[in-house]
Image (tube, rainbow, N blue to C red; front, side, top):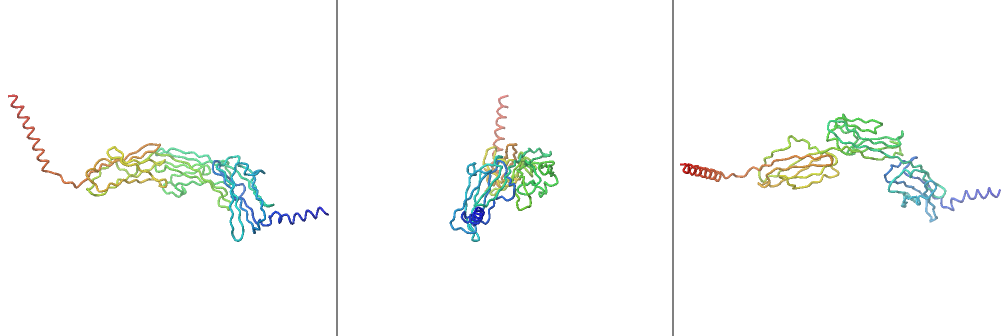
Length: 345
């Protein structure tokens, strides 16, 4: 009878002694179980503890992995505190620079006698890039392992689903549960960085999303080019904008030249989308601006150049000087002829 009474008293009053009566909710995030982590990417989970009141009584908060304190296993724990709706919220964030397979396990967050438990699984993604040969099919891959039913793969280019790109859709083929993306009759315009989004529990409150990149490499190609050399006739004192539009991946380096000499190096912004249009303005045109200009694009796949021959109009021609010059030349020639004739006789 005495033991029963002791147990009853402990069960009734122990939460008050430990302060656990104040813990309203405890949850490890992300939600769901198992929680998935991508290998070689940063590791992050958070334990959120909501308390109804805070009277200064001690709260014992423990985070363990497979029963051992997490701080002793190479993880960093940071804590933030806030108040919302008259409730105190503590968030213990667990981070690690890189996720490895050994990070799988049973994670427990405990406050007093309450706890939350999550099973963490680690998966990996194998990607395959390709080089574009114009007119041939080009394929890239994004293979998550393990591949489970709750997993979905969606492809993007420039943050737009590939199925929503009009020029791409007729030539697009997705196979192997969307793990393989193939573009039929690929061209230089198709080169670039593609993103595969790996989604667990798609469309549910516990959805998790991860991203990897696969690349289609292509040498630079100048677009809308009628010929390799374009002749331009422009009036003096005007402004001429030389323009080149190019595509290619990796993003090419750009150099402008005049008569074979570099006059400007130009960077293509990282946020620009292919095709890239580059402009070299020449203001207040004068005779010194005449010559052959070129835009040159180069990446690891190759180089391409487009040239412009610029002729400046509107300058007066000194016809008198030209006639005098011709007349003087004729007199000189006649004198030489007469000298040779007299010498021969």
